[in-house]
Image 1 (cartoon, protein in one colour):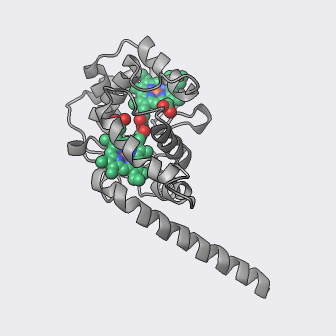
Image 2 (cartoon, rainbow, N blue to C red):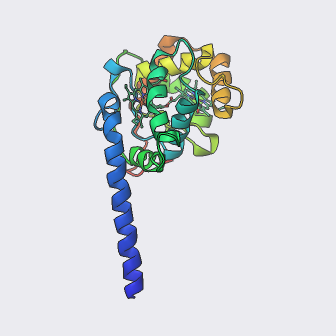
Length: 217
Ligand code: HEC
Ligand code: HEC
């Protein structure tokens, strides 16, 4: 019994230590992504809440290795290529910083992101059918398809990323299977910026957590 209690205490302590660590690490992200992680349109930094730890870690590695953000025209991505190596590259981070950081980001309370455009949510809901197979009926994301949460995404960020895939700024590196899938989808779809703004106007109304705040992926 004593041993069991010790184990539980240890687990709780370790959990608290990880949470603390992640919070401290996130301090340097908050300057752009906001203290609550919901993003900042003025800085072009997207909403990070509701993203899975697996997806966040994959993007951090992609930024650190130049799979994302290295294209000459990727002004916004280039900001992350400066940040990510500090958390991913072993020569900067001898201790494992990525796991506590991504666990902290994945546990951030859900927030819907500020939007800019004036899309038509009803039209967007209809257009969403083309995206639902991979990103989920309500944009909650689908880990089995490696497709991230898009519910609550900012419209300006959705438009930028979709066009990045379409023009080869993102998802064009050989071996980037998930990016290549999305890039092929973006090139195959005939969606202009106003169609994408409609989709985003609907997505921003979707909430990918249940009543207890648990992600519904
Ligand atoms: C100097 C500003 C800045 C800082 C600091 C910053 N970011 Fe970013 N981040 C951005 C911008 C801008 C983008 C959008 C990149 C794009 O358009 O591809 C971004 C994108 C991301 C993405 C991709 C999100 C997605 O949906 O694919 C993740 C994950 C991310 N940042 C995590 C972090 C973490 C974790 C930190 C702290 C270690 C951090 N960022 C610090 C500006 C910043
Ligand atoms: C065949 C599956 C598939 C379909 C269909 C699909 N996506 Fe994706 N999407 C993905 C995958 C996989 C990723 C992650 C790619 C990566 O890691 O770079 C992604 C990523 C994205 C991103 C980047 C999100 C972020 O946080 O940076 C956007 C935006 C996006 N998709 C929009 C759409 C829209 C809009 C549609 C419908 C018109 C759509 N997708 C249809 C698989 C799909």
